[in-house]
Image (cartoon, rainbow, N blue to C red; front, side, top):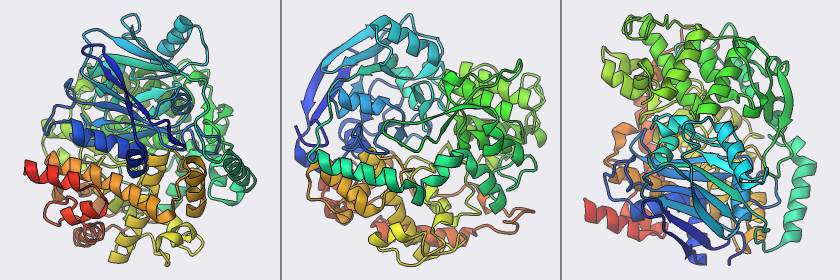
Length: 626
């Protein structure tokens, strides 16, 4: 056993039903840390190049980090990964709540699922007791019903359940994996991978305290955060939740509106934190977190009800089903959130794909003959709700949209790919690169496709106070949001890798721990004589392994681009006439490649870079397959 980790992994072969325990030595744990590191290592080692993401040969990986389950603010996150059925590349997604901490308390650092079951099953983990059980009686049922049925069947209301939902069962490529019925490992279609393996759920109950090197120091750090988080960037989320970004982005002129064709929305007030407060029943939180940024809504409405058991919409969901679809009705965004959680659908992917369909309808590319009779105009809330059901069930137009907007545009043609707002097949989240230029660079080069969680948000780095946490990483000067110089590319590299570290360790990004405090947390948990530099390099190692996986799967520089819409100027609003040029973006991308040590022709990490990161085996693998 290593401190911070158990040094133990569970391998489950769903084809044969065999299960095995494998040890993880300290060298492996310190080199790959957790999260993305574990996932990328597994995918590169165990997947043959070109494998079908929905075949039994794919792996579905649950990974924790050294801070997952520790008694520290923000230590409630775990990661899930696979080869993505949406992008065809690397998939790694984080989730909060309590499942990850429970898995760690059960004594496991990682689970690898391989093969596929003939009949639906779920995995039951109770500490070191592990069992595959039939899920035939659960197949086809909504998320909350499955969670409660498992708890009743096993006689414990505190069991934590991770599941793919009915959308994943039907192999919807914009499906996700739900935890606690309201915490999603979203993006990249992980629900479909789970469904393809006939793995309906993973249920876990743990009774062990995760190993820690210095419990007293960890307790001191926890007390420091409790006493100081109001003075950090965490306070805004503690008071107004993530939906506060509706007002912030609208005032900046970058609130995605009508499929990103506009940056301000006339109905934004009805989507703000203040409006959501009117339907909020209570505030929820994740394991060990004092911030309580989760708002649980309750709406008793005959047309658009919202059941509190499915939580409430975050900013991304509110933007995707609100302004992006031209809808200014909090009831609709809350009801859409409930439906997506009950089906196991990615709210960003679904909302932006529907927005693409709405624009296609308004341009005459889709007609009522294509839309099952729906008048799919912006602002039609009834149509949005109907399409959510159709996507989850793969019915009519919903079957086309269930693959995401890139696939739909490729099938429909007529130039509609030009307004498919996605990168590598994954829809862009509710942050516009025409307002935050560095963010655009970050989501373009991301190995998972457009992903706002590990990209930078330039608005936080425009002042000297804003870059305080980046100074230990070598970023000493603030830059404007619309800067896209080589210096901005350098800032993006430094800041983005620090975000990836949160994924590796199991720390939530909303916990504004300064870099030196994160290093102290990890040192207290693991006993490693670690530093900010070592941890930052660990994040780069994980990121480069993910990029190497994509390069092996055929991705190149052309895949690291913004969608055409992001080079178009807004006609009005605070960000009018503002957008990066293609030339600016190309230069910044090449600067980023150079800083990362990637080959400018292949966009893959070079042998020299991989050797520097102490993973020469990756270079040998890539050279053998070239």
